[in-house]
Length: 180
Image (cartoon, rainbow, N blue to C red):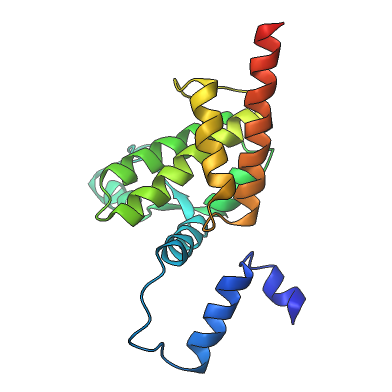
């Protein structure tokens, strides 16, 4: 059973909450835990595929354009898999960054903005940690601070936490090499 649940990349707190939901409805007096809700939303979004850009399809007439518009996501790896995979190209990480930036600017709540901001910085962290590429105009000092925030945020999943940790080390190494 433990092996089955470990593959979901859920924290112990999320597993406990899931079990409690299965056993019965939550008590009305329990206040909502903001970190838990952010973590749940982040997990949900990371399970989705990267949506296609809204470019027209080849040889698109009115019928094929409508068909292409209906297909909005790439059947393939999830955002979470793409962010954590060292083989994900810098171009795809830039697309994820732009996607998160666009969705975050349209977010209906602070919780959504926080989650899309985490995905935005995860794409930047992935480019830095996996490829040594700097895909933002933020300084290394600012990036190290942002990445460290997500390393210690309770709602950040373990895989992203590791990615942010590697990116923090990458920014520190870049600073040290600039000094020498």
